[in-house]
Length: 367
Image (cartoon, rainbow, N blue to C red):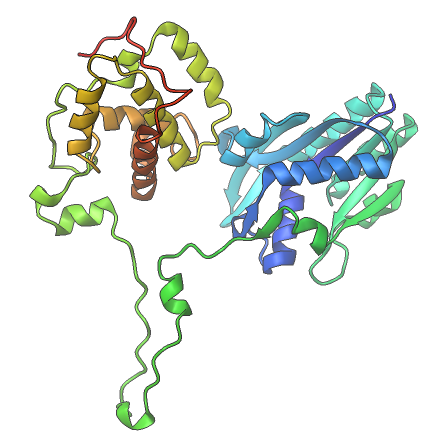
């Protein structure tokens, strides 16, 4: 078939990009525009092979094969298929398991079936050499893309490089069209970036060490629970401060069986980031309030802000637990993620009533 397919080893692509752009192979050091990256891969593959794209296969590891936020975004993009292996920790380092084997099996099957005339590989692993050789024997042209190495040396298997029909380099300029070094997110980064005040040598005690700036830390709800009077605390997750729920209905009670199916389908495209999860939940809850009680319930809710009534907050946490990156259990969700969930919830509540907001009362109980 006169079309091309791209197989991406995400661990290689993003790890090598992180090394090049930040000097550290940790992918957390990167900010990735996944939609932009897929678009650039697609355009380049079609240009260099002269064939239309059939599909991009994205191979990556994930804890217990639970899709991470980037996987949830990628798998709903056109012409993208995500294949996940295991991500395990050994000797303090994260390692992928089964990704290479999955890529090899996919490459072998695609070439055997002649699914494409050209296959692009973005990988550096020599374990794929037998698959590349077999694909060539089936008449498939093999294109190997390398990420520019930080030290100018190869970051791919020499045998794999030698076996490829065509070789291309993804250099710094190309990568930074969609991948950049992440901005520092520490609350102390601004304080540390400011120049220290000048102090004359005579004003400094000779026997005392130079004082270091103290990083500024934003208190979590748990910190507030231990330091503030209970009457000033308005977070439902803080043990020991429980307000009555004032008759606030749960989303489950406001949702019809038909809406359950729609919600589950829409959840596929939710990335799993806490703020987005909270916003999705809050928007659904506000949209489904019955018309005759909507204003009253919203006014009651606003009185407790930034707190969320305890039962509704618990339902939000259970919803968030569906997304493995937030936590496989309500108790695994960190204080920071809980704050982001609530911020997202209030953002969803405050979305202006418009074309997407309809009050639904049929089949809903408000008790």
